[in-house]
Image 1 (cartoon, rainbow, N blue to C red):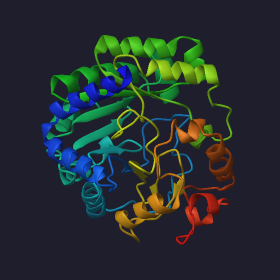
Image 2 (image 1 turned 120 degrees about the vertical axis):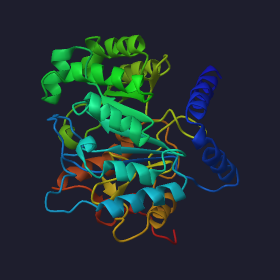
Image 3 (image 1 turned 30 degrees about the vertical axis):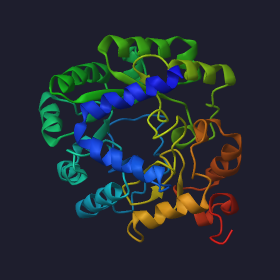
Image 4 (image 1 turned 45 degrees about the vertical axis):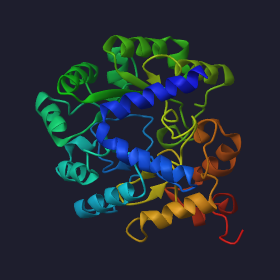
Length: 353
């Protein structure tokens, strides 16, 4: 019960912080109570180009140098389709999307007065001038990746000198301009054991920012790596996300906590591929060929990603890991079309089943 009240309190905070979203949120809940499905969030990668050099980057196999990114007009059409399906939050990500000249136009197409528009960054572009731009464009939240509370450790992992200091400065600059800041980290065996995970939480408390803590997934640079947490480490994660200023990607669902992949949240690549999440590299269609509504209908009607899962399916669900994620290792590039996956029977049921 206490956890439920804590979730309601967090939801109420953002409804009051972003009142323009409230009518659309109320409309979504009304439709959900009538048995209809509504999207809640979208992760939209606008580019895979990045100034960082992270060994664990999840986009390693998603990058397709010979493929053309969606045009600005197509990007704007995509976010309008997301709005039509109920999305209350669009997180514009990458790569590093803050360097894109088309970013302001895409943000405007999101309708930032009635949608929570967030931008994900490694922090490198956060100069005072860029922070001015972000506030002027109407961005609600900037999510900044943070790998360690120790500056040298963080900077070495990202391959960008003085990046930690840029993040701390950027955090202050954005908040001074009325933009909310979230930090995002991945729990690992190492940062749990050496106390760095605790240190990042204490730093978030000291700076009064929200810290999103997710679990490691064996995809991208961590494919075939032994990175999954054991039960004691997963228990640490469950405890950590109950603390003040803490959350994970399953904290903001409509009705209950859990993995929202597919049912409430989708991931869209710069090339228009639609996946259940940014760690589940199975494509259910491309937006150059089919509208988002039709693709999402396949996810809801013909896949196992049509309900809230208890935990992160790519980090905790043994069957999904064994039957869906591990076979992806044999493919040179991602995403793998659902119809071509070795376990097509599991992830794309026939329409008459």
